Amino acid sequence: MNPYSVLGVNQNASDEQIKKAYHTLVKKYHPDRFQDPKEKEKAEAKIKEINEAYGQIEQMRSGNSTGSGYSGYSGSYASGSSSDSLKQARIFLSQNNLAAAQAILSAVQNRNAEWNYLQGMIYMRRGYFQGAREHLGRAYQMEPGNGEYASAYQSVQNMGRGYFAGNPFTNMSTRGCSISSLGGLACCAAGTFLLSRGGCCSPCVCLPFLCI
Amino acid sequence: MFGYVRPVLGELDETQKKIFQSYYCGLCKAIASRYSGIARMTLTYDCTFLAILLDSLVTEENDIEGDHCAAVIRRPVMKNESLNVCADVNVLLAYYNVCDDNEDQPGMKAKGAKKLLKGSYNQAKSRQIYLDTVIEEYMQKLWQKEKEGCSSEDEMGDLFGQLLSSIADLMTENNDAVLLAYHLGKYIYLLDALDDYKDDIKTGSYNVYYQTYGQCDDLLQKAEFNLQCSLSKIAEHYQKLPIKKNRELLDNIIYIGLIQYFIQKEEKA
Image (cartoon, rainbow over all chains, first blue to last red; front, side):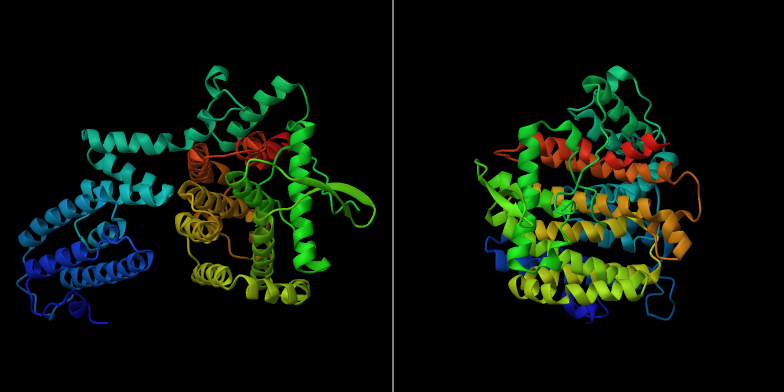
């Protein structure tokens, strides 16, 4: 499907016009505005379509491809627009509209510290922890002095500790275990309840129906 | 892909053990009465857990009766609606798991298993048309990604997580239960990949860790971050659930059952 017709704009529309059309449509079809599950579902599908179309246009326009009639797209303008885009992505992120935020980020060419930070935050929300750590780490490396990036990187690194921290079967801190490997951690967890019960924790489960 | 979600029985008291067994046998019985004796062989711990979790959100009392298993042994058996739906889920997942084996390693064994389960699968499909479409959709996506040689743990785990959460979504209104299922799916997928890593290299089957890191000796160090994050998320959503019963049993599964793979590994080493 033609991405321009999805947004209801002309092929020759300016970036501004496209962005405006996009924002209007996103607001109109925001799934939170619909109560009825069926309508909500329809809106979600529509939003997806709109995001894809917008992402596609952004990609086409910011790509290095020549002869597409956008030769006037100057470098300085591109960098200005990418910082605007990041601002917009941040807004979408705060509204938990991950698809829209992602569509914007994918289209941005200038992948600076902020870009990496935002990408990391999107991954974090989606449960892509590996990707989150990678991008937040990159943002932190690029701008170590930025408190926002540093604390996000710190929190993603601490993510994995929640399981053992709230685990009623173990008390990590008092045993002072090193969190070096899951094997080590697991052993630590096991060690604690092994000691407390003084028994074997080997889960030698006899399958009821298999031991007929 | 199955068997990672189960309690550490040695850490349960007799009452809790009996409750777990009655769910396990109850699921087995539900499969037998809805399907066939052969389908019964596909009984999994994972679906038992799903049944316990869902049932513990619905009612406060456990309704256990004695029943016969294989004509001789009398065992405590549970009967409830959650078990019936989980029986369907169990059969559907088992069938797709066999199909998955067939994709990985086509051979007589996988082919035979697929044939044996086909009848039960058709029955399950007619009972749960929507569930079957959902599972098939995500399995197709997984196979597609495997063919492409996808090297992202996040993406592969996400697909299996979505599969499991879509199943949970149909069975419960509780959003935390659905999210728990999502992260559990991710965890199961990644743990299975970790577990099969060496075998997959030997047989040349797809393995997401091999795609990402190639052959390496410190895979656990590389893989642990994502696994730990998934565990944390599982625990986070589990703590928010309005559980009405079986808390001790569920605690056991969530907090030590899920990591017993690592505990056993450590003990062997």
